[in-house]
Image 1: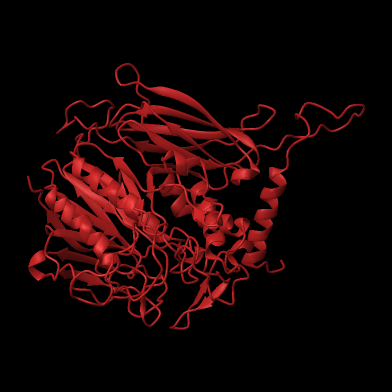
Image 2 (image 1 turned 135 degrees about the vertical axis):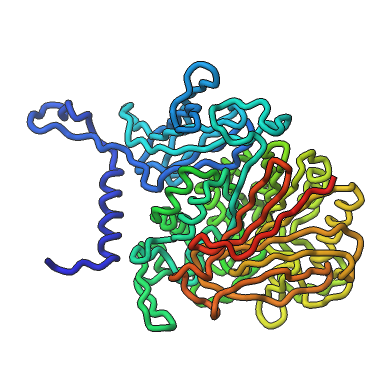
Length: 554
Protein backbone atom coordinates (compact mmCIF):
# COMPACT_ATOMS: atom_id res chain seq x y z
CA UNK A 1 0.00 0.00 0.00
CA UNK A 2 1.32 3.46 -0.88
CA UNK A 3 2.17 5.51 2.20
CA UNK A 4 -0.32 8.35 2.73
CA UNK A 5 0.75 11.42 4.70
CA UNK A 6 -1.30 12.84 7.56
CA UNK A 7 -1.78 16.00 5.50
CA UNK A 8 -3.27 13.95 2.67
CA UNK A 9 -5.61 12.20 5.07
CA UNK A 10 -6.91 15.46 6.45
CA UNK A 11 -7.24 17.01 3.00
CA UNK A 12 -9.19 13.95 1.95
CA UNK A 13 -11.45 14.30 4.96
CA UNK A 14 -12.05 17.95 4.17
CA UNK A 15 -12.86 17.05 0.56
CA UNK A 16 -15.25 14.33 1.70
CA UNK A 17 -16.97 16.81 4.01
CA UNK A 18 -17.25 19.31 1.19
CA UNK A 19 -18.82 16.71 -1.07
CA UNK A 20 -21.22 15.75 1.70
CA UNK A 21 -22.11 19.40 2.10
CA UNK A 22 -23.29 19.76 -1.49
CA UNK A 23 -27.07 20.26 -1.52
CA UNK A 24 -28.95 17.26 -2.85
CA UNK A 25 -31.13 17.68 -5.89
CA UNK A 26 -33.84 15.24 -4.92
CA UNK A 27 -35.11 12.75 -2.37
CA UNK A 28 -33.74 9.21 -2.48
CA UNK A 29 -37.05 8.03 -3.95
CA UNK A 30 -37.33 10.68 -6.68
CA UNK A 31 -35.88 11.18 -10.17
CA UNK A 32 -35.10 14.25 -12.26
CA UNK A 33 -37.98 15.16 -14.60
CA UNK A 34 -38.09 13.07 -17.75
CA UNK A 35 -35.48 10.55 -16.61
CA UNK A 36 -35.47 7.08 -15.14
CA UNK A 37 -32.75 5.06 -13.48
CA UNK A 38 -30.96 5.25 -10.14
CA UNK A 39 -32.51 7.93 -7.90
CA UNK A 40 -30.41 10.82 -6.62
CA UNK A 41 -29.58 10.48 -2.92
CA UNK A 42 -29.99 13.32 -0.46
CA UNK A 43 -26.82 13.74 1.56
CA UNK A 44 -27.46 13.64 5.29
CA UNK A 45 -26.35 16.71 7.23
CA UNK A 46 -23.66 16.01 9.81
CA UNK A 47 -22.20 17.92 12.78
CA UNK A 48 -18.45 17.87 12.02
CA UNK A 49 -17.44 20.04 14.99
CA UNK A 50 -19.61 18.38 17.61
CA UNK A 51 -21.88 20.34 19.95
CA UNK A 52 -21.44 22.72 22.88
CA UNK A 53 -23.38 24.61 25.52
CA UNK A 54 -22.39 27.86 27.15
CA UNK A 55 -23.12 30.63 29.66
CA UNK A 56 -25.46 28.29 31.55
CA UNK A 57 -27.35 29.92 34.43
CA UNK A 58 -30.09 28.63 36.74
CA UNK A 59 -32.73 29.04 34.03
CA UNK A 60 -30.99 29.39 30.65
CA UNK A 61 -28.37 27.96 28.34
CA UNK A 62 -26.94 28.58 24.89
CA UNK A 63 -26.65 25.49 22.70
CA UNK A 64 -24.31 25.53 19.68
CA UNK A 65 -23.25 23.42 16.75
CA UNK A 66 -22.01 23.52 13.17
CA UNK A 67 -23.73 21.82 10.27
CA UNK A 68 -21.98 20.31 7.26
CA UNK A 69 -24.20 22.45 4.99
CA UNK A 70 -27.21 24.75 5.11
CA UNK A 71 -29.96 23.59 7.42
CA UNK A 72 -32.15 24.49 10.38
CA UNK A 73 -30.95 23.65 13.87
CA UNK A 74 -33.12 21.61 16.25
CA UNK A 75 -32.34 20.95 19.92
CA UNK A 76 -34.22 18.64 22.28
CA UNK A 77 -33.75 18.96 26.05
CA UNK A 78 -34.95 16.31 28.51
CA UNK A 79 -34.49 16.34 32.31
CA UNK A 80 -32.61 13.27 33.53
CA UNK A 81 -31.97 11.65 36.91
CA UNK A 82 -28.71 10.72 38.61
CA UNK A 83 -28.33 7.61 36.47
CA UNK A 84 -29.07 9.43 33.21
CA UNK A 85 -32.62 8.09 32.99
CA UNK A 86 -35.31 10.35 31.50
CA UNK A 87 -37.44 11.70 34.34
CA UNK A 88 -41.16 10.94 34.27
CA UNK A 89 -43.83 12.42 36.48
CA UNK A 90 -42.42 14.79 39.11
CA UNK A 91 -39.39 16.61 37.76
CA UNK A 92 -40.13 15.66 34.15
CA UNK A 93 -39.20 18.22 31.50
CA UNK A 94 -38.96 17.89 27.73
CA UNK A 95 -38.72 20.62 25.12
CA UNK A 96 -37.78 20.72 21.44
CA UNK A 97 -36.50 24.03 20.13
CA UNK A 98 -36.16 25.01 16.49
CA UNK A 99 -33.33 27.42 16.02
CA UNK A 100 -31.99 29.59 13.22
CA UNK A 101 -30.99 28.35 9.81
CA UNK A 102 -27.26 27.71 9.53
CA UNK A 103 -25.86 29.19 6.34
CA UNK A 104 -22.52 29.97 4.77
CA UNK A 105 -22.84 33.50 6.22
CA UNK A 106 -22.21 32.04 9.72
CA UNK A 107 -19.85 29.28 8.53
CA UNK A 108 -22.86 26.96 9.04
CA UNK A 109 -22.80 27.54 12.80
CA UNK A 110 -26.01 28.15 14.74
CA UNK A 111 -27.04 28.84 18.34
CA UNK A 112 -30.24 28.61 20.32
CA UNK A 113 -30.79 30.52 23.54
CA UNK A 114 -32.91 28.20 25.69
CA UNK A 115 -34.72 30.07 28.46
CA UNK A 116 -37.23 29.30 31.21
CA UNK A 117 -35.41 26.11 32.21
CA UNK A 118 -35.80 24.50 35.66
CA UNK A 119 -32.87 25.20 37.98
CA UNK A 120 -30.35 22.68 39.24
CA UNK A 121 -31.44 20.12 36.67
CA UNK A 122 -29.35 17.87 34.47
CA UNK A 123 -30.49 17.69 30.85
CA UNK A 124 -29.90 15.20 28.10
CA UNK A 125 -29.34 17.24 24.94
CA UNK A 126 -29.77 16.20 21.31
CA UNK A 127 -28.87 18.49 18.40
CA UNK A 128 -29.43 17.94 14.69
CA UNK A 129 -29.92 19.95 11.52
CA UNK A 130 -32.77 19.61 9.05
CA UNK A 131 -32.07 20.27 5.38
CA UNK A 132 -34.19 22.42 3.10
CA UNK A 133 -36.22 19.40 2.05
CA UNK A 134 -37.19 18.63 5.65
CA UNK A 135 -34.91 15.62 6.12
CA UNK A 136 -33.27 15.30 9.54
CA UNK A 137 -29.54 14.70 9.63
CA UNK A 138 -27.12 13.26 12.17
CA UNK A 139 -28.03 13.65 15.85
CA UNK A 140 -25.27 14.33 18.37
CA UNK A 141 -25.96 13.90 22.08
CA UNK A 142 -24.63 15.74 25.10
CA UNK A 143 -25.60 16.88 28.56
CA UNK A 144 -25.44 19.91 30.84
CA UNK A 145 -26.73 21.00 34.21
CA UNK A 146 -28.37 24.30 35.10
CA UNK A 147 -27.08 26.18 38.13
CA UNK A 148 -28.82 26.17 41.51
CA UNK A 149 -31.55 28.74 41.89
CA UNK A 150 -30.43 31.97 43.58
CA UNK A 151 -32.83 31.27 46.46
CA UNK A 152 -31.78 27.64 46.93
CA UNK A 153 -29.49 26.64 49.78
CA UNK A 154 -28.12 23.34 51.04
CA UNK A 155 -30.26 20.79 49.25
CA UNK A 156 -33.61 22.58 49.29
CA UNK A 157 -35.75 23.18 46.22
CA UNK A 158 -34.26 20.49 43.98
CA UNK A 159 -35.96 20.05 40.61
CA UNK A 160 -34.26 17.04 39.02
CA UNK A 161 -33.26 13.64 40.32
CA UNK A 162 -29.52 14.22 40.78
CA UNK A 163 -28.33 13.43 44.30
CA UNK A 164 -25.64 16.14 44.47
CA UNK A 165 -26.38 18.81 47.14
CA UNK A 166 -28.13 21.63 45.36
CA UNK A 167 -25.78 24.49 46.27
CA UNK A 168 -22.55 22.56 45.58
CA UNK A 169 -20.87 22.86 42.20
CA UNK A 170 -17.43 22.66 40.67
CA UNK A 171 -15.73 24.14 37.65
CA UNK A 172 -12.42 24.21 35.79
CA UNK A 173 -10.52 26.93 33.97
CA UNK A 174 -7.45 27.28 31.76
CA UNK A 175 -6.32 28.97 28.55
CA UNK A 176 -3.98 28.70 25.57
CA UNK A 177 -5.02 26.01 23.07
CA UNK A 178 -2.84 24.88 20.11
CA UNK A 179 -0.13 27.49 20.52
CA UNK A 180 3.54 27.71 19.52
CA UNK A 181 3.00 25.13 16.77
CA UNK A 182 1.94 22.34 19.13
CA UNK A 183 -1.33 21.16 17.63
CA UNK A 184 -3.28 17.90 17.73
CA UNK A 185 -0.84 15.01 18.08
CA UNK A 186 -2.93 11.86 17.88
CA UNK A 187 0.10 9.70 18.66
CA UNK A 188 -0.05 10.91 22.27
CA UNK A 189 -3.84 10.94 22.46
CA UNK A 190 -4.51 14.46 21.22
CA UNK A 191 -5.11 17.37 23.61
CA UNK A 192 -5.07 15.24 26.74
CA UNK A 193 -5.52 18.19 29.07
CA UNK A 194 -9.15 18.44 27.94
CA UNK A 195 -9.67 14.81 28.93
CA UNK A 196 -8.13 15.49 32.36
CA UNK A 197 -10.49 18.44 32.90
CA UNK A 198 -13.45 16.39 31.68
CA UNK A 199 -12.59 13.61 34.12
CA UNK A 200 -13.17 15.95 37.08
CA UNK A 201 -16.86 16.11 36.05
CA UNK A 202 -17.13 19.89 36.38
CA UNK A 203 -20.39 21.83 36.10
CA UNK A 204 -18.80 24.34 33.72
CA UNK A 205 -15.50 25.42 32.14
CA UNK A 206 -13.99 28.89 31.84
CA UNK A 207 -11.72 29.24 28.81
CA UNK A 208 -9.64 32.24 29.85
CA UNK A 209 -8.61 33.30 26.37
CA UNK A 210 -6.31 32.31 23.51
CA UNK A 211 -8.99 29.85 22.49
CA UNK A 212 -7.09 29.55 19.20
CA UNK A 213 -3.69 30.73 17.95
CA UNK A 214 -4.57 32.49 14.71
CA UNK A 215 -1.01 33.85 14.49
CA UNK A 216 0.75 30.50 14.96
CA UNK A 217 1.15 28.22 11.92
CA UNK A 218 1.05 24.49 12.65
CA UNK A 219 3.44 22.29 10.68
CA UNK A 220 3.03 18.58 10.06
CA UNK A 221 6.13 17.73 12.13
CA UNK A 222 8.18 19.55 14.76
CA UNK A 223 11.50 18.32 16.12
CA UNK A 224 11.54 18.73 19.88
CA UNK A 225 14.56 19.77 21.90
CA UNK A 226 15.36 16.17 22.86
CA UNK A 227 15.11 14.99 19.24
CA UNK A 228 11.65 13.45 19.42
CA UNK A 229 9.39 14.21 16.47
CA UNK A 230 6.02 15.75 17.28
CA UNK A 231 3.45 14.94 14.59
CA UNK A 232 0.55 17.34 14.14
CA UNK A 233 -2.77 16.79 12.49
CA UNK A 234 -2.89 19.62 9.93
CA UNK A 235 -5.38 21.42 7.72
CA UNK A 236 -4.88 24.01 5.04
CA UNK A 237 -6.12 26.87 7.25
CA UNK A 238 -3.42 26.34 9.92
CA UNK A 239 -0.51 26.39 7.45
CA UNK A 240 -0.06 30.18 7.76
CA UNK A 241 -1.09 33.12 9.93
CA UNK A 242 -4.81 33.82 9.68
CA UNK A 243 -5.76 36.91 7.66
CA UNK A 244 -8.98 36.07 5.84
CA UNK A 245 -12.26 35.25 7.54
CA UNK A 246 -11.98 31.73 6.14
CA UNK A 247 -8.56 31.29 7.76
CA UNK A 248 -9.78 32.57 11.13
CA UNK A 249 -12.76 30.22 10.96
CA UNK A 250 -10.41 27.39 10.05
CA UNK A 251 -8.56 27.82 13.33
CA UNK A 252 -11.71 27.06 15.30
CA UNK A 253 -12.57 24.16 13.01
CA UNK A 254 -9.07 22.78 13.59
CA UNK A 255 -9.33 22.73 17.38
CA UNK A 256 -12.69 20.97 17.19
CA UNK A 257 -10.99 18.07 15.38
CA UNK A 258 -9.63 17.01 18.77
CA UNK A 259 -11.80 14.24 20.22
CA UNK A 260 -11.00 15.23 23.82
CA UNK A 261 -12.22 18.77 23.31
CA UNK A 262 -15.36 17.68 21.47
CA UNK A 263 -16.23 15.18 24.22
CA UNK A 264 -15.77 17.75 26.97
CA UNK A 265 -17.73 20.50 25.22
CA UNK A 266 -20.64 18.09 24.68
CA UNK A 267 -20.83 17.55 28.47
CA UNK A 268 -19.46 20.72 30.09
CA UNK A 269 -20.83 24.24 29.48
CA UNK A 270 -18.29 26.85 28.35
CA UNK A 271 -17.74 30.43 29.50
CA UNK A 272 -15.31 31.96 27.01
CA UNK A 273 -12.96 34.95 27.22
CA UNK A 274 -11.13 36.25 24.20
CA UNK A 275 -7.58 37.54 24.27
CA UNK A 276 -4.86 38.38 21.75
CA UNK A 277 -4.10 35.17 19.85
CA UNK A 278 -7.62 34.94 18.48
CA UNK A 279 -6.28 37.79 16.29
CA UNK A 280 -2.50 38.24 16.63
CA UNK A 281 0.05 38.43 19.44
CA UNK A 282 -0.21 41.36 21.90
CA UNK A 283 -2.48 43.39 19.65
CA UNK A 284 -4.36 46.54 20.63
CA UNK A 285 -6.98 48.54 18.69
CA UNK A 286 -5.55 50.83 16.03
CA UNK A 287 -2.21 49.04 15.82
CA UNK A 288 -0.41 48.71 12.50
CA UNK A 289 1.55 45.49 12.88
CA UNK A 290 5.11 45.10 11.66
CA UNK A 291 5.31 41.40 10.84
CA UNK A 292 6.49 40.21 7.41
CA UNK A 293 4.21 37.15 7.60
CA UNK A 294 1.16 39.39 7.14
CA UNK A 295 -0.10 41.07 3.99
CA UNK A 296 -2.86 42.72 6.06
CA UNK A 297 -1.13 45.03 8.53
CA UNK A 298 -4.16 46.89 9.92
CA UNK A 299 -5.00 45.05 13.14
CA UNK A 300 -8.55 46.44 13.19
CA UNK A 301 -9.30 44.54 10.00
CA UNK A 302 -7.77 41.36 11.40
CA UNK A 303 -9.61 41.81 14.72
CA UNK A 304 -12.96 42.23 13.01
CA UNK A 305 -12.47 38.95 11.14
CA UNK A 306 -11.05 37.14 14.15
CA UNK A 307 -13.84 38.42 16.37
CA UNK A 308 -16.52 37.29 13.92
CA UNK A 309 -15.04 33.79 13.75
CA UNK A 310 -14.75 33.68 17.55
CA UNK A 311 -18.35 34.81 18.07
CA UNK A 312 -19.60 32.26 15.57
CA UNK A 313 -17.83 29.48 17.44
CA UNK A 314 -18.32 30.41 21.11
CA UNK A 315 -21.65 29.62 22.85
CA UNK A 316 -21.94 33.02 24.52
CA UNK A 317 -25.29 34.39 25.65
CA UNK A 318 -25.09 38.18 25.36
CA UNK A 319 -27.53 38.99 22.59
CA UNK A 320 -25.38 41.64 20.90
CA UNK A 321 -22.37 39.34 20.86
CA UNK A 322 -24.45 36.31 19.97
CA UNK A 323 -25.68 37.56 16.62
CA UNK A 324 -23.95 40.79 15.63
CA UNK A 325 -20.27 40.89 14.64
CA UNK A 326 -18.21 44.01 15.15
CA UNK A 327 -18.59 46.84 12.65
CA UNK A 328 -16.63 49.90 11.59
CA UNK A 329 -17.75 53.45 12.27
CA UNK A 330 -17.59 56.29 9.74
CA UNK A 331 -13.98 56.93 10.67
CA UNK A 332 -12.98 53.33 9.96
CA UNK A 333 -12.56 52.43 13.61
CA UNK A 334 -13.54 48.96 14.76
CA UNK A 335 -16.74 49.01 16.85
CA UNK A 336 -17.06 45.63 18.56
CA UNK A 337 -20.13 44.03 20.02
CA UNK A 338 -20.07 43.83 23.81
CA UNK A 339 -18.86 40.52 25.24
CA UNK A 340 -18.14 41.33 28.89
CA UNK A 341 -20.96 39.78 30.88
CA UNK A 342 -22.17 38.28 34.15
CA UNK A 343 -23.13 34.61 34.45
CA UNK A 344 -25.11 34.01 37.67
CA UNK A 345 -24.52 30.53 39.08
CA UNK A 346 -26.81 30.44 42.11
CA UNK A 347 -26.41 31.57 45.73
CA UNK A 348 -22.74 30.69 45.99
CA UNK A 349 -21.32 32.13 42.78
CA UNK A 350 -21.47 34.87 40.18
CA UNK A 351 -18.95 34.83 37.31
CA UNK A 352 -17.95 38.15 35.73
CA UNK A 353 -16.36 37.57 32.34
CA UNK A 354 -14.09 40.47 31.33
CA UNK A 355 -12.96 41.78 27.96
CA UNK A 356 -9.41 43.09 28.42
CA UNK A 357 -8.62 43.36 24.71
CA UNK A 358 -11.30 45.38 22.90
CA UNK A 359 -10.85 48.65 24.83
CA UNK A 360 -7.12 48.29 25.49
CA UNK A 361 -4.84 51.31 25.18
CA UNK A 362 -1.65 51.03 23.08
CA UNK A 363 1.19 49.01 24.60
CA UNK A 364 3.66 51.47 26.14
CA UNK A 365 5.97 51.26 29.15
CA UNK A 366 2.82 51.74 31.25
CA UNK A 367 4.18 54.62 33.32
CA UNK A 368 1.82 57.40 32.28
CA UNK A 369 0.80 59.71 35.13
CA UNK A 370 -2.80 59.55 33.88
CA UNK A 371 -5.03 56.48 33.65
CA UNK A 372 -4.86 54.48 30.45
CA UNK A 373 -7.36 51.74 29.67
CA UNK A 374 -7.33 47.98 29.97
CA UNK A 375 -11.13 47.70 30.43
CA UNK A 376 -12.45 51.08 29.33
CA UNK A 377 -14.68 53.32 31.45
CA UNK A 378 -17.98 51.72 30.45
CA UNK A 379 -16.74 48.26 31.44
CA UNK A 380 -15.19 49.61 34.66
CA UNK A 381 -18.52 51.15 35.66
CA UNK A 382 -20.34 47.92 34.81
CA UNK A 383 -17.90 45.78 36.79
CA UNK A 384 -18.06 47.95 39.92
CA UNK A 385 -21.85 48.16 39.76
CA UNK A 386 -22.51 44.47 39.13
CA UNK A 387 -19.95 43.08 41.58
CA UNK A 388 -21.08 45.51 44.28
CA UNK A 389 -24.73 44.49 44.04
CA UNK A 390 -24.03 40.75 43.76
CA UNK A 391 -25.59 38.70 46.54
CA UNK A 392 -23.57 35.59 45.71
CA UNK A 393 -21.09 34.39 48.31
CA UNK A 394 -18.20 34.29 45.81
CA UNK A 395 -17.56 36.75 43.00
CA UNK A 396 -15.21 35.20 40.43
CA UNK A 397 -13.69 37.62 37.95
CA UNK A 398 -12.71 35.70 34.82
CA UNK A 399 -9.89 37.79 33.35
CA UNK A 400 -7.89 37.14 30.21
CA UNK A 401 -4.79 38.97 31.54
CA UNK A 402 -3.12 38.74 34.97
CA UNK A 403 -2.93 41.69 37.39
CA UNK A 404 0.53 41.59 38.94
CA UNK A 405 2.57 39.50 36.49
CA UNK A 406 4.91 41.47 34.26
CA UNK A 407 4.13 40.49 30.65
CA UNK A 408 6.52 42.33 28.31
CA UNK A 409 5.80 43.31 24.71
CA UNK A 410 9.32 43.84 23.45
CA UNK A 411 12.17 45.36 25.44
CA UNK A 412 10.24 48.30 26.91
CA UNK A 413 6.50 48.04 26.36
CA UNK A 414 4.06 46.08 28.48
CA UNK A 415 1.27 43.78 27.29
CA UNK A 416 -0.73 43.58 30.52
CA UNK A 417 -1.18 46.26 33.19
CA UNK A 418 1.91 45.66 35.37
CA UNK A 419 4.66 48.12 34.41
CA UNK A 420 7.82 46.93 36.26
CA UNK A 421 7.46 49.86 38.69
CA UNK A 422 6.58 48.69 42.23
CA UNK A 423 5.52 52.17 43.29
CA UNK A 424 2.18 53.99 43.11
CA UNK A 425 -0.21 53.04 40.28
CA UNK A 426 0.51 54.48 36.84
CA UNK A 427 -1.05 54.03 33.40
CA UNK A 428 -3.34 51.00 33.22
CA UNK A 429 -2.73 50.25 36.90
CA UNK A 430 -4.75 53.37 37.78
CA UNK A 431 -7.86 51.87 36.17
CA UNK A 432 -7.58 48.64 38.18
CA UNK A 433 -6.74 50.60 41.34
CA UNK A 434 -10.06 52.41 40.93
CA UNK A 435 -11.89 49.08 40.66
CA UNK A 436 -10.22 47.65 43.77
CA UNK A 437 -10.88 50.82 45.76
CA UNK A 438 -14.55 50.77 44.77
CA UNK A 439 -14.87 47.15 45.92
CA UNK A 440 -13.48 48.15 49.33
CA UNK A 441 -15.67 51.26 49.53
CA UNK A 442 -18.77 49.19 48.71
CA UNK A 443 -17.76 46.47 51.22
CA UNK A 444 -17.55 43.75 48.61
CA UNK A 445 -16.24 40.49 50.05
CA UNK A 446 -14.92 37.22 48.60
CA UNK A 447 -13.62 38.36 45.21
CA UNK A 448 -11.32 35.89 43.40
CA UNK A 449 -9.57 36.62 40.10
CA UNK A 450 -8.93 33.72 37.69
CA UNK A 451 -6.78 33.98 34.57
CA UNK A 452 -4.36 32.24 32.20
CA UNK A 453 -2.23 33.84 29.40
CA UNK A 454 1.31 33.37 30.76
CA UNK A 455 1.68 29.59 30.13
CA UNK A 456 2.40 28.50 33.69
CA UNK A 457 0.34 28.11 36.86
CA UNK A 458 0.51 30.20 40.02
CA UNK A 459 -1.31 31.30 43.16
CA UNK A 460 -0.96 34.96 44.17
CA UNK A 461 -2.22 36.67 47.29
CA UNK A 462 -2.57 40.47 47.07
CA UNK A 463 -2.55 42.55 50.26
CA UNK A 464 -2.27 46.27 51.06
CA UNK A 465 0.22 45.38 53.81
CA UNK A 466 2.82 44.65 51.11
CA UNK A 467 1.65 47.19 48.53
CA UNK A 468 2.57 50.68 47.39
CA UNK A 469 -1.17 51.24 46.80
CA UNK A 470 -3.15 50.39 49.93
CA UNK A 471 -6.78 51.36 49.33
CA UNK A 472 -8.11 47.83 48.73
CA UNK A 473 -9.01 44.64 50.57
CA UNK A 474 -6.84 41.50 50.22
CA UNK A 475 -7.77 39.03 47.47
CA UNK A 476 -6.49 35.97 45.61
CA UNK A 477 -5.55 35.51 41.96
CA UNK A 478 -5.08 32.01 40.53
CA UNK A 479 -3.36 31.44 37.18
CA UNK A 480 -3.61 28.28 35.08
CA UNK A 481 -2.45 27.24 31.61
CA UNK A 482 -1.45 26.36 29.03
CA UNK A 483 -3.73 23.43 28.26
CA UNK A 484 -2.27 22.57 24.83
CA UNK A 485 0.58 24.93 23.99
CA UNK A 486 4.23 25.68 24.74
CA UNK A 487 5.29 26.34 28.33
CA UNK A 488 6.88 29.58 29.56
CA UNK A 489 7.59 31.44 32.80
CA UNK A 490 7.56 32.03 35.62
CA UNK A 491 7.57 35.80 35.15
CA UNK A 492 8.65 38.50 37.63
CA UNK A 493 5.95 40.32 39.63
CA UNK A 494 5.10 44.00 39.99
CA UNK A 495 4.78 45.13 43.62
CA UNK A 496 2.20 47.91 43.21
CA UNK A 497 -0.69 45.84 44.60
CA UNK A 498 1.43 43.79 47.01
CA UNK A 499 1.38 40.32 45.46
CA UNK A 500 2.89 37.34 47.23
CA UNK A 501 3.73 34.37 45.01
CA UNK A 502 2.40 31.58 47.22
CA UNK A 503 3.02 28.99 44.48
CA UNK A 504 4.26 28.86 40.89
CA UNK A 505 5.16 26.02 38.54
CA UNK A 506 6.34 26.23 34.94
CA UNK A 507 7.86 23.99 32.31
CA UNK A 508 11.51 23.06 32.16
CA UNK A 509 12.35 25.49 29.36
CA UNK A 510 10.55 28.08 27.21
CA UNK A 511 8.39 26.62 24.46
CA UNK A 512 8.52 23.07 25.82
CA UNK A 513 6.02 20.77 24.09
CA UNK A 514 2.93 19.40 25.86
CA UNK A 515 4.09 15.82 25.27
CA UNK A 516 4.30 14.52 28.86
CA UNK A 517 1.53 16.73 30.30
CA UNK A 518 3.68 17.77 33.26
CA UNK A 519 3.99 21.37 32.09
CA UNK A 520 0.35 21.88 31.04
CA UNK A 521 -2.02 23.18 33.70
CA UNK A 522 -5.65 23.83 34.54
CA UNK A 523 -7.40 25.05 37.64
CA UNK A 524 -10.27 23.37 39.49
CA UNK A 525 -12.66 24.94 42.00
CA UNK A 526 -14.98 23.03 44.32
CA UNK A 527 -17.63 25.03 46.13
CA UNK A 528 -18.62 23.24 49.32
CA UNK A 529 -21.88 23.07 51.20
CA UNK A 530 -20.16 25.17 53.87
CA UNK A 531 -19.51 27.84 51.19
CA UNK A 532 -15.79 27.00 51.13
CA UNK A 533 -13.89 27.70 47.90
CA UNK A 534 -11.26 25.03 47.25
CA UNK A 535 -8.96 26.06 44.40
CA UNK A 536 -6.49 23.53 43.07
CA UNK A 537 -3.96 23.71 40.25
CA UNK A 538 -3.48 20.50 38.27
CA UNK A 539 -1.37 19.29 35.39
CA UNK A 540 -2.70 17.74 32.17
CA UNK A 541 -2.33 14.26 33.67
CA UNK A 542 -4.80 15.24 36.40
CA UNK A 543 -2.26 15.45 39.24
CA UNK A 544 -2.86 18.18 41.85
CA UNK A 545 0.22 20.38 42.20
CA UNK A 546 -1.26 22.98 44.58
CA UNK A 547 -4.45 23.43 46.59
CA UNK A 548 -5.85 26.13 48.87
CA UNK A 549 -9.16 26.28 50.74
CA UNK A 550 -10.65 29.77 51.04
CA UNK A 551 -13.25 30.51 53.71
CA UNK A 552 -15.76 33.25 52.94
CA UNK A 553 -15.86 36.49 54.88
CA UNK A 554 -19.33 37.40 56.08
